[in-house]
Length: 186
Image (cartoon, helix red, strand yellow):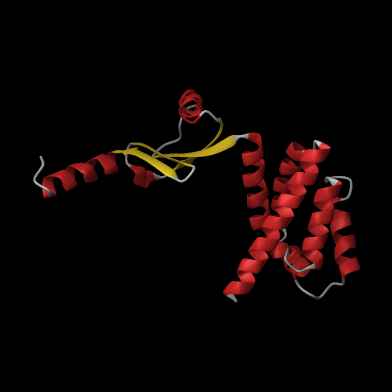
């Protein structure tokens, strides 16, 4: 079962890579990114429909008709074809993984670095702008800032990007002090 899950993951990633390649060629990668998100919302709003598309109760043609009814004329043709193939192969249940991988590849292609900033309260627009500019200078990349609030952060800010973490929270500073005391350095 772990092998099956890995194969499904690899298949979704291959679909995402192929779709990005086609959409870059067509100049529709931005539109496709937005439509992937919209389709994800539609699938999340109708879990029973997604389950039906994932299973074997419908034929390939019935699945295609259902998807056409939902998305034809509202979705890039390459994306719609990809979604139909995923449904045909009964892996449309992995759509969220496919969507995340497309966005990851899109960001890489566009030189965008996703930076997650976590604090104990919502950052102001001014703070977000300053952080975005500072991270752009630090990394020499375009920044997509994602913020979230976590009351456990206890003052300060925790920033994660590209596998790195900058932890300037009160909790972290207290841990550093406690470690120094335990080592007899304070």
